[in-house]
Length: 213
Image (cartoon, rainbow, N blue to C red; front, side, top):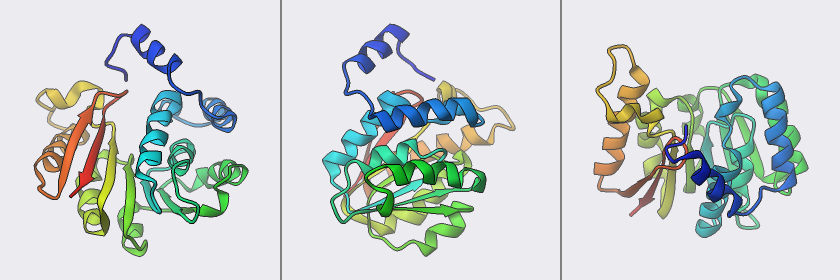
């Protein structure tokens, strides 16, 4: 979901760097073959992720929620030469789809895939992390944060996607809407936790940038 008028979104995208051809191909194939293709980051948000990664120049990146691999490749653009990226997704059926594009990129040997539940896998991945992107099941955002915060380098950055949740976080959640409830609590957590400083950007469905002190 976008919160700005469509012509403003189009203008912003047109006046941002174009996505690399490999990512354009990945985007197209995702819309042709994957379930719920709107989950993909896409051109504009992808360029935002790439820019943030380039500013951080991370040695170790962690992504929670790979989907088809678009965002991982965007984040990888900012890695230092000897950097590594760990990406986790519970959907094992997408593993080969992701790998195909990872191996065609310049970062194939630096990207490590993990299939399964993130809370089971996270303790097995050694930090410290310079950049983390959280974009998996919303109910566990706070659990992911609590799992990774002690593994972050000072000055490291945690990115959290979908934190506006189609605007539902601004309204009283419905009784059985556990995702909205979880995101409301998560947004409070990362805004009040003294270990990070946070700004929430209304990019697409909301993107939070949290810098570790």
